[in-house]
Image (tube, rainbow, N blue to C red; front, top):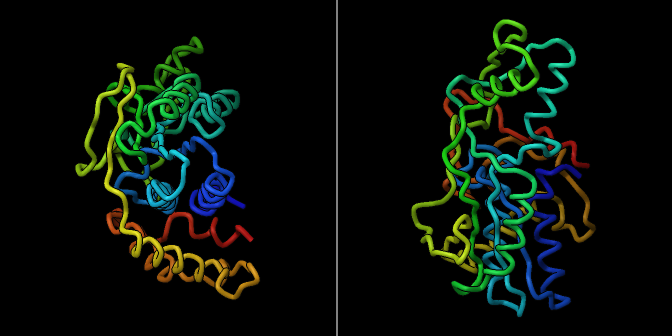
Length: 263
């Protein structure tokens, strides 16, 4: 099962289990891509956030969320990709000269999860936690630093090639919604945002719509992603996450092929 499906159904299954067994704390791992998402990955992360907030106050479990930036050194980060490209003699690929991202290290990511579990519930539960990651970094500048760290000169020893923005990507990411209220924490580098809980009736309608789309409505748990059309997926996603934006010029739904392969 691929991560696009895991974002919602994986979170939902584990969160429901946490409620059932009476877990004390539940921390949902989200992403800055969940803020005004432009891809299936970001939209399903946002949906997982909404479901986590929906469960807040419905059991003794204290729910919270953390929004990660790009985690340097993780399996899907740029550094392993660039290392592989460098080992082949280049070029180092960057999508766009103006693209920026927020970055954090693996220890910072782990620390944020622990801190959020400690501070969760301070604003009534369902809070969103973020690390103060400073200013976003231009990807091309990070690529140049990486090449120099290997004792080479970018553009001379190793070429940097711009590949263009892919469907669902944004030039920059955002960390929070305007409607979310920032509340100080005892930790100078950890931000806590209080967010309104989703309407319960609307959330139940969203859950039912996704279950029908996935094939659970027949009671047999059969997956029908191969039968899902682009318009059907967009309709349900936009209903669930109305702030989802669609970049100009996009000709395909990001992630739909992965969802169809999830069976």
